[in-house]
Length: 230
Image (cartoon, rainbow, N blue to C red; front, top):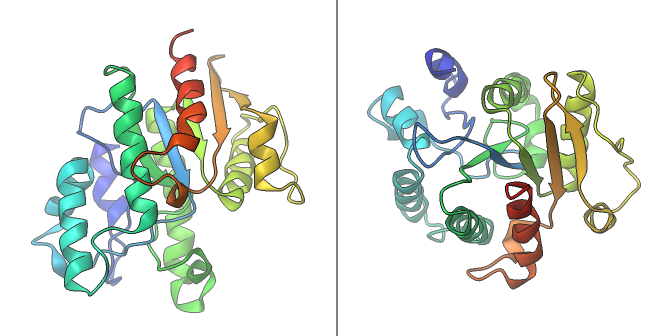
């Protein structure tokens, strides 16, 4: 994937970089995915010295967060969004509790960043949104995560549809009328890679509700940790 990374982050004549993922380091195992719809904080190409600088950042979570905060403050926004505060705390806690076993990949069903998921359907974003949706497949099959945590009903629907298309059918098909809270209550969903390895999907409420501590997310963390203790 490394040799194709430039194509994954930049679309010709677009002012924003795509964000295929954010990982702790270049050698991250990527055995747990956290998947949303798409990145919510666009990063402009002109704000970076070159593409390599941006690529290095998405391979270094700490430095990526430092840059994100600077750009948000410059643009008159809060240092971090509630979602980002919760996501950072969740990832840090989960990786620490695993004692180095888990390396999280933060990714999305669409790599094109917009202020809201609804913006993906705007005519001006059509080309970038189509391209951004193709990137998840490359990231997914590069890492082949053991666990996927999905934090929205829309992302869950897109993920299960993706698995069906790639002939890795999930144990439960997506039902759009089922509420996210009921998907969460129903427990994990499994799928099987071509080599017979089992992958597990956990549905989660939005990370904006995690906060700095995330007491209500502890059962989810325990479930994920249990997968790696089997």
